[in-house]
Image 1: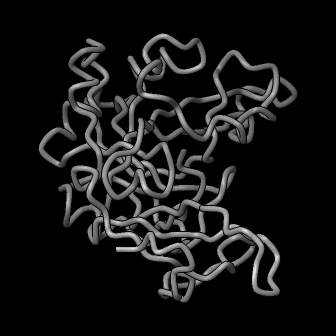
Image 2 (image 1 turned 180 degrees about the vertical axis):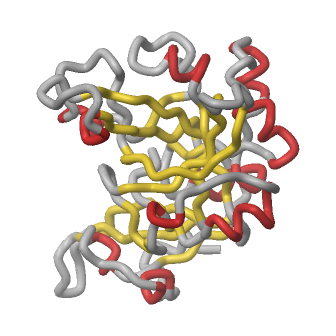
Length: 247
């Protein structure tokens, strides 16, 4: 799975990488070196402009953890931060979003953990690792809108935008750390992935790739990452690897 990641790419950075897009400066998110489930994240998506009828690429904040439109409440979103690529086109919670509401979620990299057994006077603990390609990763995502039935529909607070990250079995260096990994979209494929008119499941699955071809740089980092309240670039500083998995 992908349960924590780093997001420091700004909308200006995304324009330089992906081309023209819209965003509301008031909704721009601060850099986050320890994004956790239910945190706000920046998503790049395409929606029809109500006035012009044109498809517009935009950056907008969404809550990480998808809430299907038919959910009775939003409490289950924290458990739906990832969608398995193998079944995303058929699971009721994801299939409509996979067909119509796809996005990418930029990330600098992501964290995974491996257990370190007790020994030499220490207790057992979980060692975090940071996995990265060294460049912004456009993680494949799906988004949904959920309306809170307790709030009037014309109130902006009635609508919650949420998203999930598409994952698959981990390969190469990522597989040393965890059995799942996020999938990414190449910049050349971004327009097709974001276009709501692209609905063929086989074509969409063909656009999903492993970041860095599955060969990522892996480094052990401080256990401060384990606390979701921890934040800052120091979380990415390399520490001695107790399991010898970095590289």
